[in-house]
Length: 81
Image 1 (cartoon, rainbow, N blue to C red):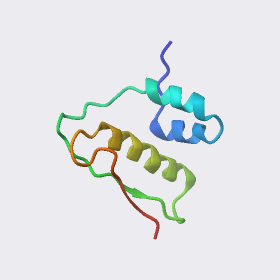
Image 2 (image 1 turned 135 degrees about the horizontal axis):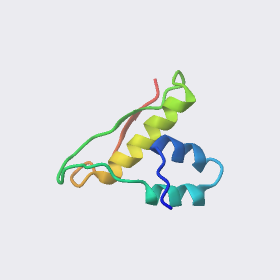
Image 3 (image 1 turned 90 degrees about the vertical axis):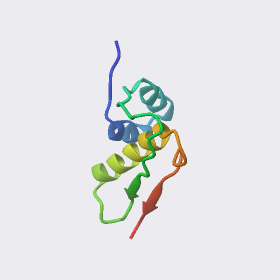
């Protein structure tokens, strides 16, 4: 049985069991990102952000940076304040 998680749920789970979180991540359904699309994730990691929002930012950033095919593959822009 395939269980799908939201990216933030996998990030949250990674704090407790990184191996299981990695397995969930590998099974996560991929959204349709057109080939040769370059998306620069801009992530808010500031102290004023709530925990769930932080996990959303982290999860979406990781997902998008791995989906990119061009110059922004494995690249992110983050800010704290």
